[in-house]
Amino acid sequence: MTYDAILLTSFGGPEGPDEVMPYLERVTAGRGVPRERLEEVSHHYLALGGVSPINEQNRALLAAMRERFPERGIDLPIYWGNRNSAPFFADVVKEMYDNGHRRVLAWVTSAYSSYSGCRQYRENLYQALADNDLVGKMVIDKVRHYFDHPGFLQPVIEDLEDKLQAMVKDGLDYSEIDVMFATHSIPDAMGETSGPPALRETFEKPGGAYEAQHLAAAEIVMNKVHSDLGVSSVSWQLVYQSRSGSPQIPWLEPDVNDAIRDIHASGKKGVIVVPIGFVSDHVEVIWDLDNEAQETASELGMYFARVTTPGSSLAFTDGIADLILERVNGAAAQALSPLGPWPSQCVAGCCPNLRRELKVIAEASAE
Ligand SMILES: CC1=C(CCC(=O)O)c2cc3nc(cc4[nH]c(cc5[nH]c(cc1n2)c(C)c5CCC(=O)O)c(CCC(=O)O)c4C)C(CCC(=O)O)=C3C
Ligand SMILES: [Fe+2]
Image (spheres, rainbow, N blue to C red):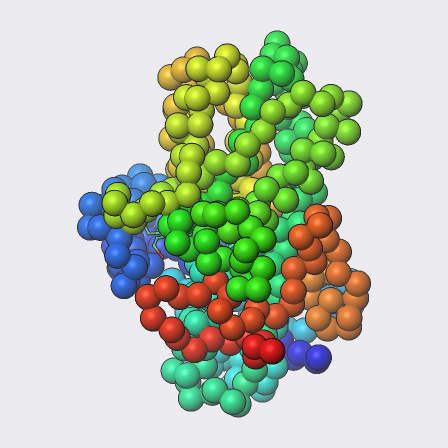
């Protein structure tokens, strides 16, 4: 397949206090999130001056991609668009079309399968084509999930090794530390339906493919860390954060704060949180982890550290180039876990919209 442009596809965030409430309303439109939750989250954003760091981080990543890709043999213009804030998908889609592009490859800042991390982006990109009357006139494909790609995991592995060694230098034994891989909680129903329908029975409920991919990524990280550091006794677990929605609806657990209390009760003295679910240090990382989870740990008198996200590191930028080259010239797919490489095309029924069925880009027809 040949492409004539790349789209860095992301979530978006507010860039001033006045943008916070409209942004939150856009993110949660039709999603059944109670008003009180929006109020609470608006305080997180306002405490940061109303500016989410996510757009600055995407500008940095865009610059890194533009600098590095030509050296990797990718000579395509790179655009940037967001679901929930400017530059909006509909505007960038129009800009790409006006500039003569007809076959666009979108790479999304979400490494895992779930409605929120996959189909919702594909629905919104279809809508952006429809808004501009470009359905059938312009194709947008999407790069596969990359939870087990070396470029995504390498920066995490290196920083986790540093953080572990620093905590040991501070006097803890490796066996007194618990590593918590943290990701965004989602409703149980969204977890159970994540991934291709044909594989659904192979994954545990309620986490589904979403949880399985996170466990696979965490296992790769821990195997490498254990062998690099020559230890085998560092315990780890997958935890969830940033729970939203109505309290009556079950979401994936345990919450990171509850998990910290549990390991404290079992005698651990230190916790290292790895935000494995995210690609940059945006609000959910700096508020829910650096602020709230760190406070939980310090109230208990525990050591706390938080590992970096891939951000705009060279390893990650090169990993994105690898993923794009898989599609552009059929380069071999790199994947470190038995689950991968994840298929390039989502199939019908993958990570469904449980509220209403909407048209999407980049979907293989059912066979
Ligand atoms: C799986 C997942 C990812 C990872 C995949 C991906 O990256 O896409 C993710 C990322 C992000 N989520 C973000 C922000 C928010 N998410 C919310 C709400 C929700 N997220 C959900 C899931 C996810 N979210 C869900 C199931 C909801 C409930 C509403 C619904 O069912 O859709 C709300 C509303 C308030 C609240 O309810 O918390 C906000 C403000 C930001 C930007 C942070 C910044 O500004 O720096 C980012 C990167
Ligand atoms: Fe979210």
